[in-house]
Amino acid sequence: MIKIVSNILIAQLLLFVYTLISNPIIAQTAVEFSEDGKPKHNIFSFRIQSWQDHFKHLKKGAILVDTKTRSLHYWNKNGTEYRVFPTSVPLNEDLTRLGYTKVTKKIVGPEWRPTKKMRERDPKLPEFMPPGPDNPLGSHALYLSWPSYRIHGTSDTRKIGRQSSSGCIGLYNEQIEELFNSVEIGTPVRIL
Image (tube, helix red, strand yellow):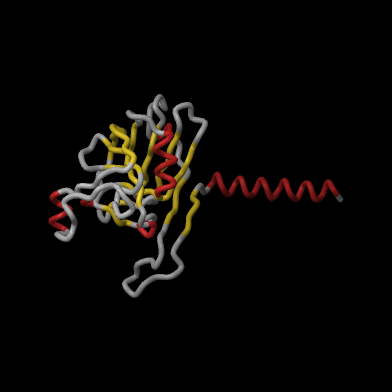
């Protein structure tokens, strides 16, 4: 009897592993849609990624942002840690910059200065906002080598899992702090 139960459990485990390997997509999907056909809540899905498909090495770790699945993948420099975080992504393709960049600066309590184009799109935006709970950059920011592009936190948790930014990648404040503490200046970043 024990052998039969053991064989059943092994078969179930093998089936689970096969399913995971053959279709490595883990997703949460919207079950309710608004009248205009948009999801009523955030969508976050991701594919398990391999750093070797995007980077030559992990000398300073690596960050991969997948704008299609609204996820950020992080590998530490010795490859022993792999973390995935849900993100907010740019509102549209025109605001989305794709390619390779790197972390150039790390700031706790970042200030926010909306760009000229942001203020043209929304004239109500302030010219400057100091650090604090109302600041859209949240508690921590990783500045990238591309001007005006950041990976940062947000106090507005409704934005995570949505197309909601003017170009930056947003994380929950707790998760940007975790990433911030793991990342070093010079960490390569790919946004796809």
